[in-house]
Length: 466
Image 1 (cartoon, rainbow, N blue to C red):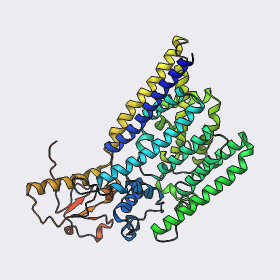
Image 2: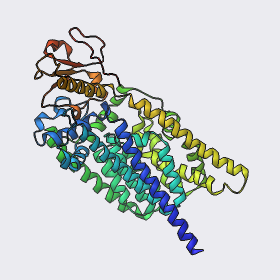
Image 3: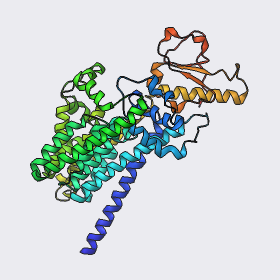
């Protein structure tokens, strides 16, 4: 019997390793199939590029010309750039640093999936291998988490830390290191994690009251260290005294100006965002949560966080990313339970098949969402196509103008839908993103990347047939 148990554990471990490998593979596939980034990712993308390309020449950094509404921290971009530094010489055929965009995004995908793997491993050690394997299947069947795992949003950098904190809460429930990690994440990347810190502290203090003093001390230490690190580094890059998350808190919460970007009803996270993110796993999540009381301590703080955060008028799915992995753990328990009881009756076997059908439906919806998302970056595609057409014309020696004069204007729509400095070739091109068109003389430009179908003096290039 011991030999059979060992063989079963070995097989379960092999399955778990394969599923984790698929998590990494799928996240990288998303990078390759949808390599460009949008306006929400703009700061971190441009900052990572500038650290790699310009080094300490901060005066030429993009954020000083286009600072955005509120400052963001450079700590995430610094980490990505440091890991990519040995490969900064790589160039695409058009002379751009496009390969470095793929590399830095892949780095973030690896960081994010590694944190998910740590979460699943902790879950596996406390619950079961079967539970963890089915939870991994839930991650794989969904679109949003793995698609966004490589996207340089402050929320994704924070997600890496919240996953590690939750992993610690599962495997070492009396440990205070999770509070330290959450406070670092709140101080550096996203101040709304402060709500999650409070809900987690309250829950853990009820279950383990003797740990509260240590949690408060470590939490304070984590917050102070994170804030000091951010202030030191960001003041250098922003060239003024700057603590980004404090300014973000004042803008979004105190002034409540985030609502200028749209308002959603209080129930939106629960009735729209979470169902879209979980897809077919949603009923499995509810079933698992009702089935196993152990999930309450690790999941309820996240649900209360979402409920409290719902009172802020402006809502986006990425604001609650931190709760989604925990809900997938519940779904794993639910589907695992159906799997373990499938042989007891035809009804239970049918229930298990229905659970598998829900994941299969999620996969189909994910494939559809991926195809739609790939078409969501026209600016990036246009800029790369422009470089490729000019390179083809050069090789054919049919360029009808002085090739040294390559001055391209990129309009706001293109800049928000895929264009970044990683796509530029500054050796032979000059780029302008001037937004005041009344101050522009269009005859100064040789090329336009624009959403407008017609501009006097310019023609749309004929694309080669594929």
